[in-house]
Image (cartoon, rainbow, N blue to C red; front, side):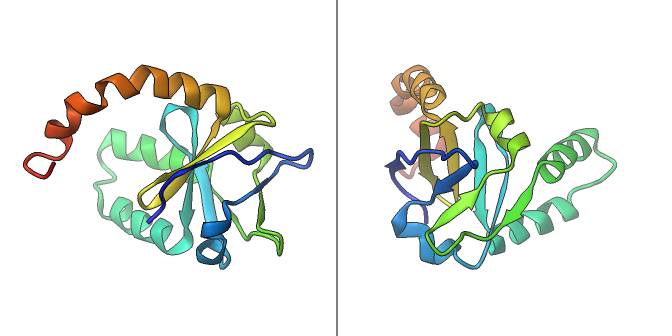
Length: 143
């Protein structure tokens, strides 16, 4: 499970230090792809394979499934962190997420998300006030 908020910097070569607490779990490989709201999703390889199987089971005759799958997989890049725990984020993915030097990495349960820090702050400012209001809709009877 991925938790927390971290603020690594993107270096001049497009590399990002993964949060130290997740380096071992991601050391065998990971997949970076486009996420919603212009962030990047980072999945451990096993979790990405689970999602792949779920999408494989979805009906290819459904236009939204085809469209989602195309963007999701076409933008995906499998990476292996270096010995220092850095991962290279390909230029097209950096451009999609508008990543500059200042980045925010958040834990989002089964994945990490990489955001441009200014974009994350704007998103959080807009969405955080409604957080308490939606808990019953998202987790009925749980919280």
